[in-house]
Structure formats: structure tokens, C-alpha cells
Length: 159
Image 1 (cartoon, rainbow, N blue to C red):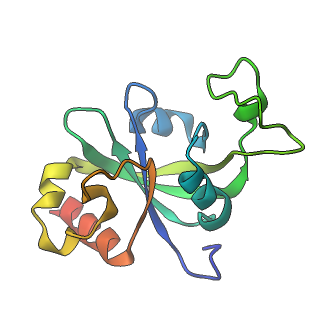
Image 2 (cartoon, rainbow, N blue to C red; image 1 turned 180 degrees about the horizontal axis):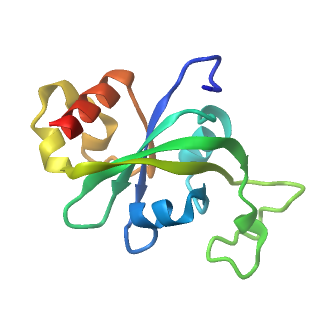
């Protein structure tokens, strides 16, 4: 059930496959999307991304750069406790249980694409020309996706 006043939203989450791949998500079942250390992305995790929202899982810093599949948000934003765990690679001494700075959501793999949909393939589709992922200099690890972009990309997967 969508948590955004009944409106399902869509997102693209980037991950380097050497750090955390779509296969890792499938294996884990449900994963905490933790370690995001950008305030704009944090605000989306905390305020906008809700249970039931759709996620494109994108492999970044890989060859090829591509959307690998879809996932679903199964838990809305909550404090990222890795920020106050001293031994975590995501530790932030300014964050604490009483004053959390960073947030995360939980996601679950939904569907692996028949073939990864590469960034180059996406760039060839004029209807996707405004997609945040395809904008020059766009580096955010979490990005909104419009419902139109979502539909177009799902159709690409179907062939």
C-alpha cells in the first residue's frame, strides 16, 4: 500500500555492484538502504520515500552502467543507526540515537530485468531526455523517477 497519501512514487537507487549488487539484494531478501551521506538524498529517505514505492536498482561505477531490476520499499524512512556505530564504515561522530542525522529505508527485490537496461539505451529514448539520471553532472545516489519514466523503462524490459 503506497504511503504517500495513497500515491505510489518511484525512485532510482544507485549502488556499485562491488559494494552491494542486485544479486546481494535478492540473496538478502530485505535490505536496509543505509550509508547514504548526502543531505539531499537523506531528505528523500527521511521525508518522501514511503512503503510501497517502486525502486529501479541501478549499477553505477560498472560496465555497463545499467538498471538491473526493480525493488519495492518495504519500510519507510527511519534513523540510519550505522551513523553512530563506531566500527561501521558509515560512522559519523555527529550522529547519535538522540540526534540522528542520517536516514535509511528497507527495500526488497521485486524483479530482475531480462537484460540490464544500459544508460546508453536510456539516452536513445527521447521521452527520457529529462530523466535526472541522464542529466550531465547528476551524481545523487537516490533520484526521483516520474511515473511516465517508470512505465517507459518497464516496457523496455518487456521487449
